[in-house]
Amino acid sequence: FHTFAQRFKQTQISKFLPVFVFLFFFGFSFILGSSTDSFLSPGDSLFHVRMSHGIFHPEEVLEMPVYTTQYTNRSNLYFGYHLLMSPFVTFCAAENYACIISGAKLFHQIIFGIVLTILFLVFRKIAKRNGLLWANHLAIVLTLLTLSSPQFLFRAIIERPLVISMLIFILYIYFLLKRRLLIIFILSLLLPLFYSISFILFLPAGIFLLISLFGTREDRVFGLQEFLATLGGIAISIIMRPDSYNYFLNSYVVHLTSLYQNILQSDQIATIQEFQSGLSNVLEGHAWWVPIFLIICSFFLYKTLRLRGKSPEKQNLLFLNIFSLFLITLFLIIARTLEYAVPVLFVTLAFNLSFFYFKDNI
Image (cartoon, helix red, strand yellow):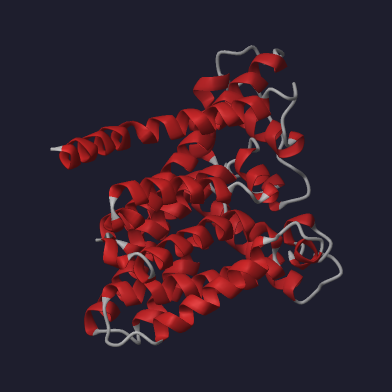
């Protein structure tokens, strides 16, 4: 009876724990946001808030930046994001900046709480095979450790649409591991509506496909299916946009051309902050997680390769460790990939710990 009572208590606490997690991180971001009367990231945030406010105030004309093709090929690359934020700012008068800033901050504080709660739930779901109590403890620790990177915390909390892309990316990785094709397709369909760099989903999709070629027939079939689901979702979403050509031009041609020129160290592009290398962050000690996870993922990749036979779990382990090493390498080239690398690295750590060291607790 005592054991039953303990399990019942753990189950009841576990049900409400995500609510407490959300309230904790929402409160945390609320305190940080209240530390200043302005935006945490003034430049781009003002542009996005003006675009969001203008959805239900079409008389407000906002000129596109003259330094991009947006000036001649207009496209609201973040329409879904602006639409989501609009209820928080649309009732403010255009000249009431305090109201607009407060509304935008509140929106992002809620989204920040949701992102961290989703990350907590992903950690817990991965570790749940090892017992509910262990899963809750590990999920809380890993969620807090994710924010131990000051750069990731800043990127996650600033008033910009990248927090939405982070959320979709985390969900995409999780449901890729769960082999849920329909959800993979839906997430791929959504990202072009909310963010410009929707091609970021091709990275996990492509690497998973390549790894699946060395697995079972079922692995190869699913690898092809998930890649086609991702490609189809993104393509359909872009085609359905009324500004599909302009979106493709600004999101794919401009970004990929800039990225290509940056890798070749073009004098015109290499100094742009968006494409700066993350190596300096490592050398200065700001990106402490790079050398640590480089060792961790290499170690667990070695252990995974030594596993006998072929199974979906081995496939997932191979994907996570190889993809994590790829993201670390990508961060050293382009620091902007930080917001995608950090949560994936901790998901990889959770999966490895759950599989290799706590399997007997099932």
